Length: 320
Image (cartoon, rainbow, N blue to C red; front, side, top):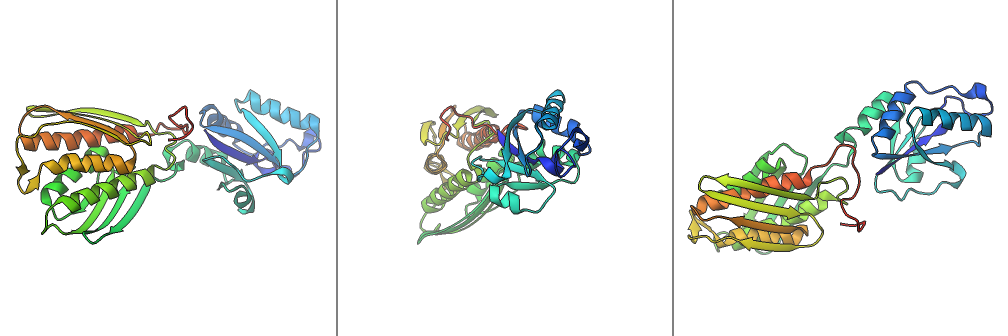
């Protein structure tokens, strides 16, 4: 659950000080908007006081807010305010960014409560899940960018056409945007390029996922690829584990060694810190491999899904 701090004077009532019942002048469009935000269950509302109000009119304000469906979890005077320890927090205040800076939170300028509600109750309010990684060794030079909330766009230049085709399946079926440029020693063999791309991709996933609040976490998919049935299950658990129940009858598909398929997914699991189970039935080796990549992409798509208004961590441990 995210924290929503609201400056009482100017954010709830228009009066600079609440000294009598006559000072209860509500900010326009407050009730429906803040009621929707509170009832979503995604935010914990806390009021911040510049001036200590008179008790009776302040109690009337709290009673009215409650009657409108607004749950106020806390009230804090600015003189005792400390930096927020919340993972995700916002401040609604008709003033400069100084208070937001002191709190260490994101300020939402108060122009219209309806606009604030629209912003907070859509995915636009969530942190962007993107990462860009550059990695250079004696064997490969890799530049990779990923957007986990993309539309499935892929711009891939690994130097290995079949590998690019498989990575495109992850992007398309996972609905992630993926850009990859590789300068690898493919004149030696494909091993270093495939392995290093997997490591960088796993690192990018781990970085883009952040604290993983609000994600489904688990993903699974069955994909029929003609005569083959591919099965993939994934858990972004923070622990790497890998199970592989696959038999290929060919050593190569075109110029691509089939042994590198397992190595790619194992390396990704290790670096992304996820549990990954993969299985495919017998059949054409090309179909087997493509089915696995498609099933992986679609399982990832399920696991990355974020429920609207949900910022909870999908774990009882408090850490993933």
